[in-house]
Amino acid sequence: MKKTFLIALTLGGLTSCLGFIANQQPADAAAWQVIKTRDYTHSRSALSTPYYVNKKGNVYMWNLHHTKRLHNLKNYPRTSFWLEKSVELRQGTKRKIFYRVSSIGNVNGYIYRGYLTKGWNPARSLNNSAELEQQLINQLPGLESDQQLQSLANAYGENITGDDFDEYSNMLDRVLGPQHKLVIFDDQSVNPLLQNPQNYGPYVKAAITNALQTKLGKSINDLQNWRVGIYAYPYSSSYYGSGALILMPPKN
Image (cartoon, rainbow, N blue to C red; front, top):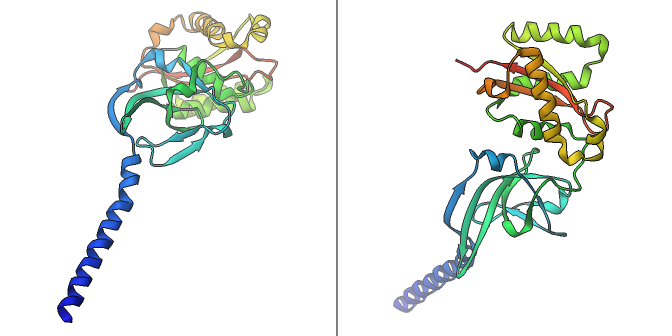
């Protein structure tokens, strides 16, 4: 009797163990396995080329192995994304290429590349200064975004009127010292820019190029590895096409 009970207990434990393994297999089998990866984080062309979701309804952004949904992109209908990585994944006999992308608002993860189209999201809000600033950073190769300088540049847009400019300049002197450069740029082609807002980057790059040459006697190429904070007036502003750069030499 005792022997029979032990055999039954052993078989029961084995059955439970097998059942546990069986329950785990579908989750493991469902995970996508990485075949190969390509990194675009140092690609100038990738950094200057946004993407947007071209599919309506539920479009999920996943972690690498697709075991967790991170975002439903129907909740971000106006967002543009930048390519960070391309990965080929396999699930059983299926193979697909997914892109790891991220937005200015730090929405990031993996999405099937067939759901993405190159270009700025046509539904994007042009009132978003951060989006315009990203376009300008992409137009200024070699300059490095700096968090402190960006905070000071944001303060320019939030607070500056004609009467406040001297106080703002004095504040920059106190915080950054004499090495900083404040460059105000003003695109004189504002009217055609308003008609063709998709051309914002090239238009304002020309304005920045002119301002750097006029005020500093420098080109963009002369500022390799300089740190920068940038403010761009949004589409809703009468100053659209204008803004400010705060520049600091490279750290030693």
